Image 1 (cartoon, rainbow, N blue to C red):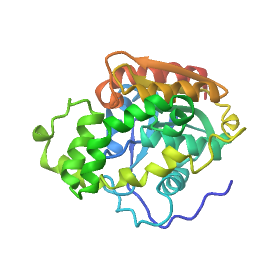
Image 2: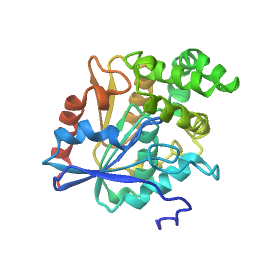
Image 3: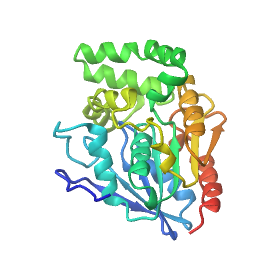
Length: 270
């Protein structure tokens, strides 16, 4: 498949000096440096290429054109010089999955950490998705009220499990999250309604590379339903849980994350 011409360019960085080329896609409200901990533990084994999504980090704001998951997948494809190991976290994991389905021959391995692909849960565990929607209600109310600062605070509390206290964060970090917060509702349709059609028969069968599904043991139960559902839909997937970790496990548990990646890379040789 030919790669599209981009209408917006993004900032990217390279970390590590190992022979494996790894494309890493961060979660919403973060940026490419979120992979420093994991890449540091694989410094001699892999070279991480990571970019800031639009409206994040040093990249420009999204211009509002098109579907945001489509746009992020198009941007990620520009960095896919394949064959590469692709890793994504949260919304970034849904982009990584899109990328793997579109360019399977360029994927040496695929890692999805805490993928928020709620369309899977809608099919497999609607009760857990309903629970998530109830838990997510304060965030939605803040968005509807137009209070971006409160919405960012609530979102951070929910997904970081309260470990990253808003009042203790640097002002620059809080401002960055507030800037990015409207990105989150823009992601809703593709991750809830599967606008890309990934769950249609045969689409995920294209991804034959070794896959690793990873989540924290303390994460919201809906993530477990997503990972379990993806495990049996993907031809060659392993599903692991990091005890004691939550949604932000690449940042809070980089050594454990890197250890599982190392095991995956042994299965996906250069």
